[in-house]
Every structure is written in structure tokens, then in C-alpha cells.
Image 1 (cartoon, rainbow over the protein chains, first blue to last red):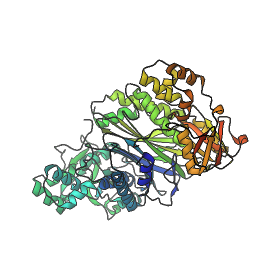
Image 2: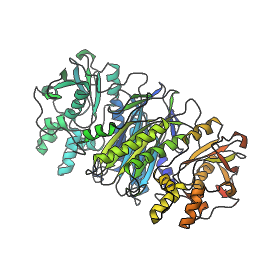
Image 3: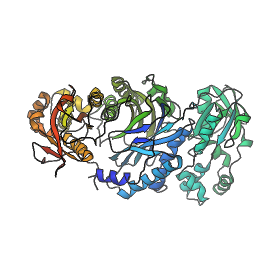
Image 4: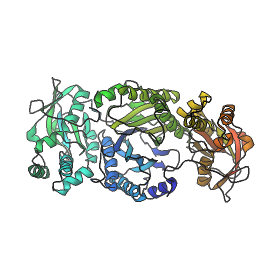
Length: 309
Length: 309
């Protein structure tokens, strides 16, 4: 199968929504941007850095690559509309592998109503997937990280600690609740909560990809405030508590520092404006010595992952 | 320098145009799309597949990555507006290297009035750059590959064979005109010719990235026609002729099959509609046995590069 036959095989698994004015196959695609603006974000996933083939099927890899990018659009309060996907893989990679990645991308697209509108293929000795997502604010204002104000409440929607325990179990070989393994392989970001947060007047919004403390720190730094989290509001889910007991790892640590579940973390002007999809976990205070406090104290421990540190 | 310090260092070399409504640093950027549509295309460049560090400086790599993506927007008749850039490099890579790539991206952005609006960094043992370009049709209709009609004239704007001879000289170690080496390292696509072609009523448009014959074949296949090229109209540039003599490689072969100069190849309804930036090199005929004919005959030889063939 040559490069053009492989592209045909891949695109046979894809279909486009009506807002795709010109789909894959030309020098560029064209997408509708009805309110005259487009959101855009990009992520790269590299074998052995972001995923391992023994832990993640190509179908799951496709879903995950799409999901983590869609979460970036949800984290502005927007709706994901399109993906462009560059895939590099060894020359010997079977066409079936590419088809499975495409099926995963398409299935996650179907969750949010987005389409794959373009891509590129290359040979490489290491598998690499580069995804760019486009999104639509539907006339609303995007919610940046920088708008949190003193007195705001801080709230989160979605899972915390699930993906971290899924990964910990895969690393250690322990047998845990398969829902946690699935959470590591394919996150389930609370996409709709992003639009709800924007509509409810969220002052700041971010997706939890680096870990709750690290991403709360990003809001705190961008907004020049301190975020005070309260652990009584951060009760781990029963699945997380059970895995914590099995693996002998503190559940709260995973809730505070585990990334990749792509929960949405937001600040709202007051408790009454917080949508039902969010739960309040803290408040915004004036900037002190630390960006984030947990029960009034700086957190002792590693807060997130650093590729170059 | 940790990942966030490195991002600060990189973004210090970038600046954004007024159509960037929200720049790098949040979960997603936001770009104006004044006519309610956005063009998008993506490319990946991988070390040892698309470039070699001994032949291309990081500054040139940045310019080249931007240029080849801008050419894809020009090849729709559009104007490039923004780039999103994923960069993977070894952990030990110096921050200076990233700064030079960023400077190259910015300088090529300045040629067309575009901005880098987002990116991602990762560690990887192999350097990889993934670029997504966005573009604006400014209310005009995009020119696809599929609109060429029998009786159209075929014309090209920009260089043919320059990059191929630059690469051949680098491979062989021969000393040739440095303009050809520069053409390989940083192509100079005729960006403005794309908008001119669309305004002049071009029926099909593509950028010559795989080689003139291969890309003419893409128009021919998409339009279900045969493209007839005439070599008397394809006189190689003097720089190409000189290098051909030095290296003992036929100049015409490089003109017909050399890619990566990102010339623009178009079909126009008649000779009088061809803009001054284009030169006529053939015509569109009814679909025969072959997609492309050269002086009435199928071309004998390799027509382009196939990553998976």
C-alpha cells in the first residue's frame, strides 16, 4: 500500500459535519466560523513519552489524542469543531493500525460533533501524533485563565485522580477497577461543562491536564491571585479510594496532582452562579507568597510533570 | 531551564498581528475569521526524513516549516493568518536552538503577515516539528484541485528545480550556486500569486511540493482530465542549468520532478486570464490513459517521493 492508498484507507473511516465547507484531500480544508472567530490549540503525543503501545490500543490512542485536544476548547468555554492530525509511524506499520487510529479519532469527534478536516503522514522510527483542534465560541466570549478575582469561588467538573491510578496500575501490573484503566487510556472530559461555565459567567477556566494543583497554579499566576483549596471538598471518588487501598498510594495525592483526566477547573463570581455540573472546592484570595494553598498551607510534594525540567 | 521558562524564552521571539484576538498562553488561542470561514492545513517535519541538522540551521528549519505551510494556503488562493507549532526535541537540546526555530517561524510569518498563535513542546529522541496553518479567503471562493476543465491553459508561478539541485549538492558535497542551497533550506513560494490566481478565475490550483509531474497529476486526477505539459515552455532557470552542468544531472528532470520549491501550479480558462506572475506551460485535455503527458508522451522516470511506498 503506498502513501496515497493509505490516505484513502484512513479517510474511508472519517466523515464530516455540514460546517466543513471543504474536507480533506486538497492543499487546505475550509471550515465555517459563523461568529467570525475561531479557537485553535495544538498538542503532540509521542510514543514512550505520552503513551505506550502495550498499554494503549491504536483506537484508544486516536480517541485520547482527540479528547485531550477537545478539552482545550472546552476549557475556553467553546465547542470543538475540527481536528487536523499529523501521524508519523514506522514504514512497516500496518494499514490496520492507521485505520484504528482514524476510527478512534472519528468516534471521539462524534461525541462532540467535530470532524477530521486534514492531516499529514510521515515515516518515522517513533510513533508521533500531532493534533490541532479548532473550535467555536458561538458568539460568547472565551474564558481565559487570567480573570479570577478575589472573592470568587473555585469549582471543578469531571474526574480527578482516575487516570493517575489507571497509569499507576499499568506501571505496577496491579489489577484494579477497569474503569480506572479506561480513564487512563481514553479520558472522558466533561465537554459540556465548559460551555455551561462560560454561560454562567465563569471568570477563569482551565482543563486539568497537569494536575489540579499545577493547573490551579496556572490560573493563580495568570490572574495574580492565590487559590485556596479545601480538602474536605475534594473527597476522592469511590473507585479512586478503592484503588488507593489496593495500591497503597494516598488517594488525595492523586486527586491533587494526577493529570490527564481533563476535568475543568473554573472560578465563578459567587456560589449561586456555579452550574450543577461543577462542585465547589475552594476560593480565590489575594495573592500571597504561594499560588495555591491546600487547607491553608503550601502543598509538600511534586505538583505536575515537566518534560524539560 | 524548565518547560515553562523555555516557553517564555520561545514566546519572547514572537509577536502577534491585530487579527489574533487571544494569543499563546491559554488553553486555546482565538483568531479572527472575518468572512466566517477559515482555511486549515497541517504538515509534519521529521529529522532524517524531511531535514538534517547538518544541512539546515534551526533558524532555517523554522522558516521552512512556516513557508511550506503558508504555501498550502496560497495554493487555495488564500492568505495565511496563523501558525500552531508542536516541537519535539531531545531533553538536552539547548534553549538557543528553540529560540532560533522561533525566530525563523516569526521571520517567515512577517513575510505574509501571519502570527504564531499556539504551540506545544515535548521531549523526544528525534526532532519533530508539527505545523498547522490557518488562512483567510477574504470573501473569495477557495480554488480546489478539482476544477480544471478541458481547454484550460496550465501555468506555473515560482521556482522549479532549485530545491532539488540544492539537495543534490548537499548530498554529493559539490559546490554550487549558494542560491540553490538557500532554496533547499528555505523555499521562497510565490505567496501573492495564489491570491492573484484566485482573483483571475483559476479553475484549479496546487503548490508543487511533490514535483511538477506529481502535482500536475493530482490536479488531473481530481479534475478527471489529462494535463499536457510542453518542455519548450519549461526552460530551466540559468542557476539550475549551471548546477546541472556541474553535477551532471539533467536540468529538465529536476524541473519536472523536483519538489519543495512550492511553486504554484494552476489552470486558467484561457491565456488572457493568466496573471503576470504565472507562465503558461501546457494545457488541459480530455482524460486519456495518462494523467500527465510531457510533449505528448508519458514521462519515463520517478515522479515524486512516497513515504510509505
